[in-house]
Image: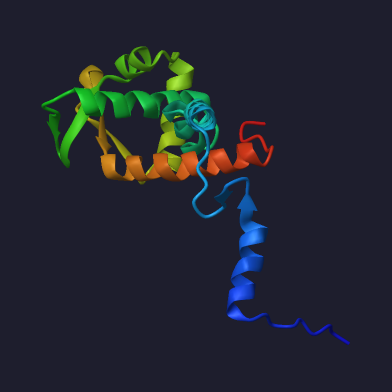
Length: 177
């Protein structure tokens, strides 16, 4: 059977509660931490914020997650995003504003070799079609690769991939194994 707890009259209940809450001359409700403890707590919070910023995945790691863990494609996507932000006005392609360069220039710009640029373009077309559309335009030796970039889709992918990478890291899993 359960034990019945007797109810105290209002005054006695307040006094009993006061005894339980009393710590020195203050009560828990109005107690304040000493200034030294507040400074220490602030330092701890700032350190935690710095650590969180340092441990969050960067754009290149997020780009790698978008393109299926392929470094050359991630580097190319990262480079495309950078050029899209910095080059203005864009070249006018058949389907709107785009970035246009020869394939060799794309490779040089991203720091990739001739073989790597081919696989990187293939991976971008396969995994990042919602972010970039790559179309050849022109004839002969002057044929350029036009890259149409969706900056909103890229920003959304960076948020999503960053969250997933952070969760995997917190659970001790490796995305790049």
